[in-house]
Amino acid sequence: DADRYRAALESTWPKGKPVEVDAIFSFNDLGAMVTCNFLAERGVRVPQDVAVVGFNDDPSAAVWRPPLASGDRRRADLAHATEQMLLSRLADPRLAPRQQTVSMKFVWRESAGGSWLGQF
Image: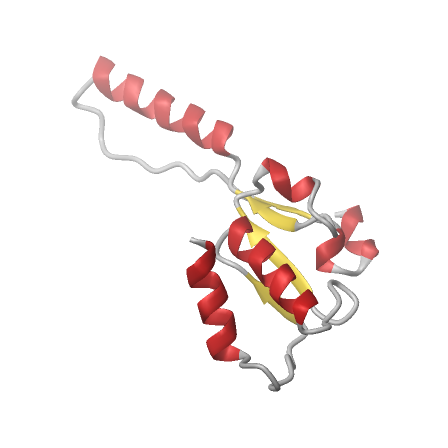
């Protein structure tokens, strides 16, 4: 939850200790949003001073200020692949175990800095 992210940030950068990093990647978008607020309170600008990236591409990431870059695990594609594998296993239980890769996607938004990245 947000309090845990906040506590982790405060233990890493207690008041008076400068935030001397170029970028912070958070486990999820909530953590990245808490990070953005924490940095703003310390007078650190996102993305000018520190780039911030979250993960899961929560719909709120696009309307966050600045818009939050995020990793998209492509939930719909993952659900479809899982469903197809399950249905085929139910149809034929003798099928050999198998794996399928569903590639994730980086969603560039302003919090990541470097507008040229948006071209990829």
